[in-house]
Image 1 (tube, rainbow, N blue to C red):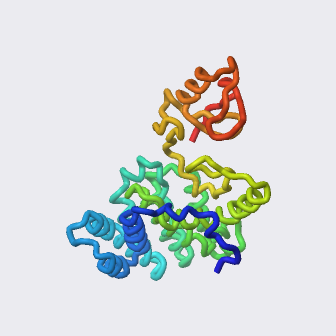
Image 2: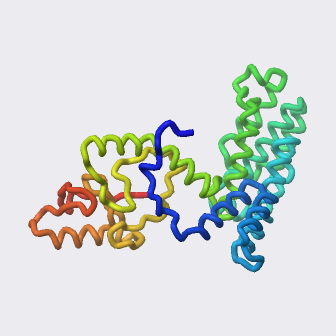
Length: 300
């Protein structure tokens, strides 16, 4: 339970007339988590028609997600990398296009697994067979590790014995598997809830300050303060100008004004031309004034 009343900072109409989007987010989240029976039960209780597009989307996604979790279970429960390696080799070209090192990482992990079983010659033979197609700098280090096989834990190669290697390879596999499906490693619902709860303390504090100062924030769809987010939670592959509502391009890049607000260059140019002052114009989202030359291009 929250110690403070969070109802004062949310918009009661934010999800009005958006039931379909909520159903979609929940169904896809359950599927992404591998909760297939729960998803089916939810679709039935929500009375989603059999011929509804959402059911088709869920079914197609389920086939891929089932394969992913089958492979992850093999890795976690049996320390078996064979299915993961087969999948990576079958998708070699696609992984190469996205500059993924997953295939090498899986062979590296299998090499380490063989080495830790006290069979250094077998590990060397495996490395010779599978490392030849890669140009990773780690190969030389891996191929000299068998020299210290009798005391690997106390050698400069002790990191190869770390249990975290299995966690890392699972995360890397899941990330790249989802990337080939053009999905993030976490479901959009999870990310939204996580970001929302991360932002709550900052927004609550801001709310109290604004109440004390008897101030209001009138700009819609924009927070009055920056919310610090972890790097993996920053999704800015495409920037849409908040003024023109158009996506940024190479010829119309995003530009940041001294106040920190970002709009596209064409919108910035129009603001500068329409300003009554010969040099300065007011930011469309705050009172601060600036000139066109003070804006800097932003690269996402």
